[in-house]
Image 1 (cartoon, one colour):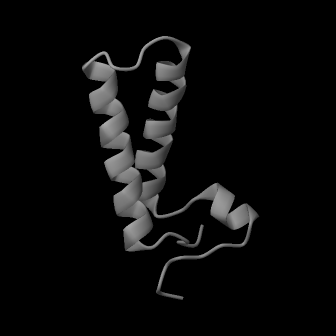
Image 2 (cartoon, rainbow, N blue to C red):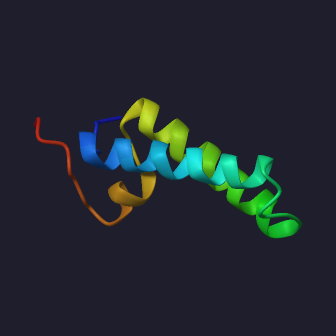
Length: 67
């Protein structure tokens, strides 16, 4: 599994995941949409940790500066 995410992508994903989590715990989002967004937040954090996004690979995108 080759890294395909750069630092900016990883940072933005973690920030978005934190915002979603804060919205959920402050009860600004609820119901089914909140569960979908929480799953998305978990996926964002996991893909940021491993620096690999399956969708980037599918569309042959690479924002990682190292080859």
